Length: 478
Image 1 (spheres, helix red, strand yellow):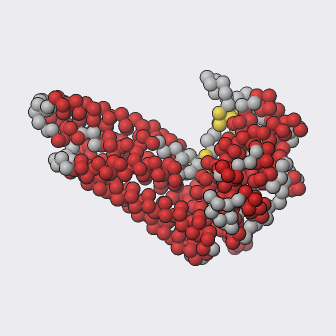
Image 2: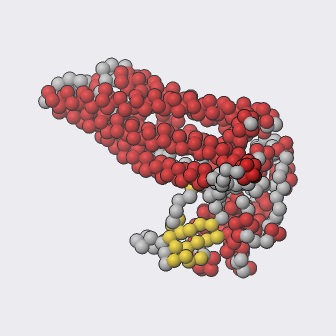
């Protein structure tokens, strides 16, 4: 979906984009040794394809208390996993002192350790439940998105209508497959983990603090239960579900890899697809195995001190899995507002190549260009329509709109007030800017592309690789 399709502008107002041949995608070679001239030459020969799912307008509201514009409706699936959630396994080990020095009365140093461990176990669930709210927001977005995608196929049952929508049905199946995996990851890897392990950590924390007053027989029994099997059974239960989901993710990535090896050129497969799938499979193996071992070890800790020895490396592994997901696997992406053009895996491969070359331009210090040359280097044109087209296609429009709102004089001339508290910034309105406004918009676009571009391009590459894998699997099965 280009700027022209968003604004219904004349088709000649922006550059026509040709579908690239996938064989030329990675002709630049190594990122560290490629020259600026070769990279720019490849950029000019590998034009970006029209495939995009991002919005071409953004609606903002002004809350009465804040007095500044914020997005009225969140339309982005967020890579919002909190770092602190990785310490949930550590929180479940907060009962160390209560279980190891299970005496009446406990030693004074053990009481200090119980107070520290119990407080830790009670504090970490706060971050788990906070992250659960972010996960629930993603789940709601994905559910709405899946309903919208399914609705596009309900056009009738006649043979003629079915025949006309074959390509659209293919796109629908591919996108539903991607969103099914995303929804499952949100439910199992985030919401399920945070609820079960968070509740378990709460019980462990309460039981550990109760152990300080273990001289009372009833308190002693309750403490042993909460910091023992009752509290730790939550993590053990989750580990079984997590292991099953991890196996599914590994198998899915394996199928994507087989399909990619069948259809894609070797250099494209080895350079783009297999590293991504290898990262996903490695994470799923470590995450699933760690969960099972930690779940069993947490039950052992109720009566056996050496269970904590087994649990210690699992705590480190869970922290690493959290970090690896946030920085290597997870991504932000716009929610699909409509089915894109019929999915063609060759076009997706072409766009992945464009993204890779653009990232080299933006992130490699040896290839850094003056800000004024940035649109020319990436797009081959200095025109405002081509720059806005690039921003829309690469999911940068909301970030770009926020930057426009920071300039009140410019924003006042570009936004459309829909009611007293809402404002809309649309790509077609930006294209009607006068010469001075166009200069300001271009400068803002330079900053947006250079600052936010690398991160958005990485995220875009990740979810396009997921779409590509699903498309190739459906192609293989058809």
